[in-house]
Picture 1 (cartoon, helix red, strand yellow):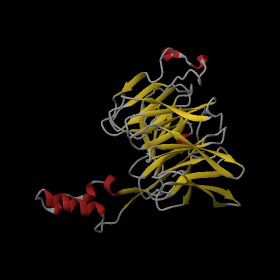
Picture 2 (tube, rainbow, N blue to C red; picture 1 turned 120 degrees about the vertical axis):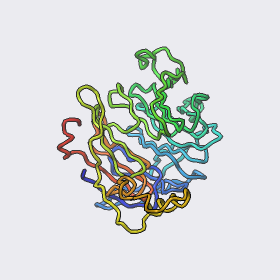
Picture 3 (cartoon, rainbow, N blue to C red; picture 1 turned 45 degrees about the vertical axis):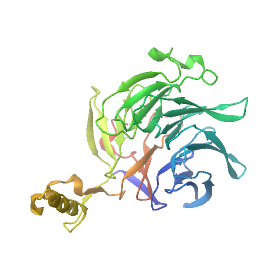
Picture 4 (cartoon, rainbow, N blue to C red; picture 1 turned 90 degrees about the vertical axis):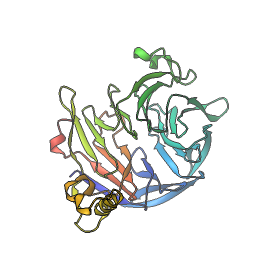
Length: 347
């Protein structure tokens, strides 16, 4: 199993983000607040509680260079937080949404950020110097359902989205007053703001995560650690490792957390089987739960669904050897891939 650090902060965590040097951590404990902890003398101490949203905070991102925090919430608003002295000062960003904001991510140059929403809309937000405020431009009428994840291409222009309509899309976010013309390269160089570059119909169910590889040449519905290694997380609470061979063919390698089997007592699986049998008038013994290994397995570190994964790469490096996960069990887990000998050729 990969070396891990396990930190129990709350009963449930909806999202989290780290400061550039990893000495501070921001997370939402499944409410309308953002808690900021700092590692002081080997212990995590609560320093700040950011209180401005009216509903659950669904997205947090912490910019590495400008040290700004952006948050998004089910209250349909977003805030940019600046550290002034010892206090985090919020600036409201009016997103013009009629449904919840679900995710948020800074662009690589940190001059824009993207917000996915339940309104089938993506907001591209940028700072307007003349009026001293953050404004948003909307990408509308492109998604058929909620936008659950956004990912910026390294060129700061292209944006990938994942949606519960099962599709992955790529858009141009070029804004004349923000982006330099030389940043537009490749076949999408002449594209306008909001123009759909590509749509991928590769999923038959809801999509919750999308990421570019470090070079921007490959796109996946998971988290890239390198050009040839990705991590996928989900409802079983156990990170999965996938790798590409020399031909570019991807395959499953292993689970990072040890899998353990529940006892044979009346647990959730047997209760479900019994209820299912009653519903269709079939005997309980007709549903032998012992034959369904995945329904009885859990990750050895997380005890519930993983709903957030954050890369912990060094600034300027194209490789990620550590990442963190958080989930409905209230834990934040740091995974270290440094000593994974069987994966050394992929990192």
